[in-house]
Length: 267
Image 1 (cartoon, rainbow, N blue to C red):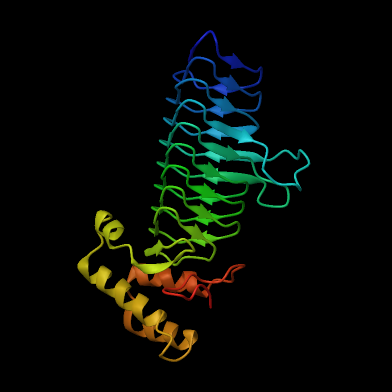
Image 2: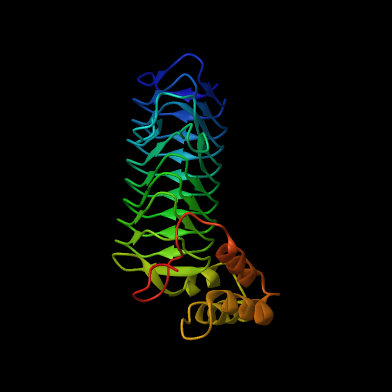
């Protein structure tokens, strides 16, 4: 049987794994599913059709699965799905999806969401993603694996951020960010490659060199068109996996412009 503090309120219909722990003053709604080994420390609110993956820990005053902050929402049955081994800290908020979006908000495995961070409706967050304090996603964002979003930073709705991007603190991201990039500035601009992140993931020196060279070529406005620069990068580094990921990202159809270095924010 799960360990449930007598002060917790569990609505009939909630499914709680046998080895889960629900601490004092938690409130669990009737459509919530809490996986094996989860621990709700205290004062946690989980509502809506929300699934919490195994071994996830949720700190006090987190509020998960509440209605989307969207004027179009009319109570449709949408979802929040959170993966395994996540660490969700104090005051974190996550909303369910909307019928106009994916119908669900999804957070991957091994994510670390620090205090007061927020995941908006219909977002898709990858694995091993870190949100520093008060980092915020608007609705419909797509965040790749191994992304780090700095404290007090905000990502505009419908923005895509590629794999292994690092967003500096107090940064507003309003354009799509290629994988392995560093984003800096009050209005986010590219500030180079996330070398530290790539080294932590054990990418080779050859891969680091290829990504840096690809970055410099792609964003050199003095040489040809973007299409020509893409072709040049593919010819030179197309066999390098992280560069292939950058090229695939650049070629995607997108709602938002690409984030650029310097004073350029789109193309």
